[in-house]
Length: 161
Image (tube, rainbow, N blue to C red; front, top):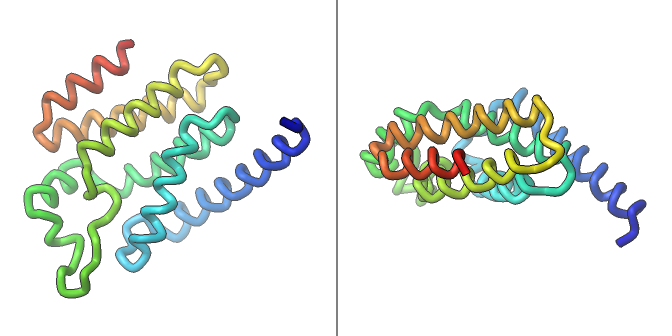
């Protein structure tokens, strides 16, 4: 593969992620119900870039994930899970629930795997490592809030590997 083309693609991806990070941070769009479909797509792409070869892409993806997590208290997610998402979506408008309320336990597992993969990369720096640990701690708090001690134990084992 052409290293110049790869470098240009990485720079373009970095610009997109930087813009997205600033947009999410400054406009507080994480929980906007009118953007649920668009945000679901964005978070899916963020997830796939957590294991991207370029360290800066992984860092920006982890920071975006941190913004997603900071918008939701684990107890709030657990409460809405027990209510069946009633407060987050309007069945009359046929809106689907926010990203964090869709298959939450599976999200916890998927993100834990990707974040643990980041911890095993040879070019892990302090900034990325700190962000990954913060994200993993959030996922552990979420598993605990959901009452999923099995998931909490699974996270601990995954981190210990």
